Image (tube, rainbow, N blue to C red):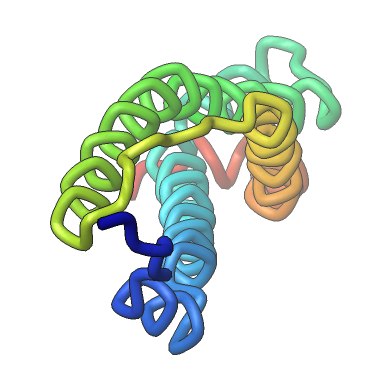
Length: 149
């Protein structure tokens, strides 16, 4: 006896109740941006002497800003190179576990176009977050930066 396909109510109810992956992704993005901003602020404040030395040796404000921007880009790119493969592996494993428990076929699709857009967005946001600490580092006089604490 053949039966008609039945929509899994637990999956439908889960999807209707809350858009959990979008909310989780948004929260992780906010926490990641806050962590990067904190890292840049602390890095600039702890490297005051090195920034002062670079300014005494001839760095202009634009070069100080660029150095902080490169630091932000490097941190973002390392996070992308490590995070994307680990995220895809963890996402596929989690979906496979979840889908097998509710009785659906565990097929996962990774939209690589969206992954590339998000990776570029991470680098752009990292550099936007670097502007504030970079301007603070660039505007401070070398004498103040080199003064012992």
